[in-house]
Image 1 (cartoon, rainbow, N blue to C red):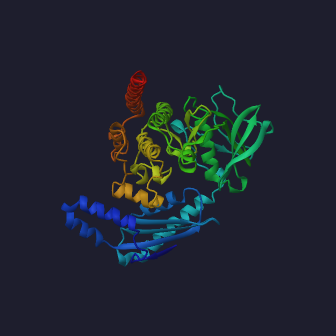
Image 2 (image 1 turned 90 degrees about the vertical axis):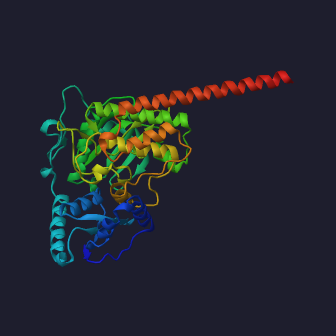
Image 3 (image 1 turned 60 degrees about the horizontal axis):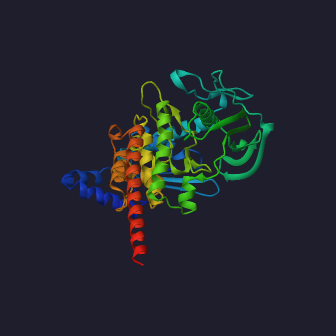
Length: 434
């Protein structure tokens, strides 16, 4: 970690453009904007091993000691290292040494958490229920007596590796002759946090059953062989269709996908489950092009208070209140859905010219949102703008979103039918003219 009073890293052109745009929209506050630039600024650089949720931990650390992120640059290398540069304000220059000490103290806390043993895992669940207990044999996940989901690994047959990541691999295989997807955690990368996330995913998935949610079949919970088995989705992810296959959704198909996702999310919310990582990569298609919500690694059962804190998910899709560590509820998923809907429309990565952290800063501080194409159906434009409102209370629920999308789909279908009837009538006239 290094810290310097004058920010020397420099602003990216994209962030400069954001700042310029913001200054235009707040021209009446000219004096105030001058004061912003006169605040003491520091540049803080973290160099460390890359690991899950590193950006979340670092931004949380900076917020914890009263720093405001004005600019951020995140880099990672193929050999597993991370370099994160933040330009911040909130501490005077004359207290730079005290700032360094405060940062080092917070960093030590993160290191201790990373190396904590499984026996020290925190509990989670509904109404204070202990969802996971660590013991040498297996991860204990409460059962309600009505389900049996522990899988005998000897009955699993691995066929082909579908995807691979730093912390796990996804295989196509069979279980009792049924075609399945098998998500296996790499034993050498499993730590306390990953075990907790794994147990949470099993706990959530065994509770849900819906046409638009990927079906959970079972899990192996005996370390080091941790895996989750679900139905196999032969159509792949919506993300791969858009960004790797360069596929395009015509409006009727786009609306069908959006309705499928909305129905799955509405079911989750009705069962007090907040997904927290809704994005195109977590939407899978089956052989009949039915889209289902997947990946519950960071999902949570909403507490009775109705709000949650601590950030999770992926920055490009993340709601501003989650980025800012503010209390949030199911409306955070609605914001992410708005970004997904924009992806379906454009086939582009949200804020593709910004790093994830730059996008997060823009969303929170500048009100940054993706640019809606001019040709977009006006009612879809309206829905997008409602979904990504800064104030969560102004965003619709998924029940309302379903009705809105179905209304658009009916209008589009009626318009297509009129066009077909008109063109067939014209063709008939031309034939008679012959």
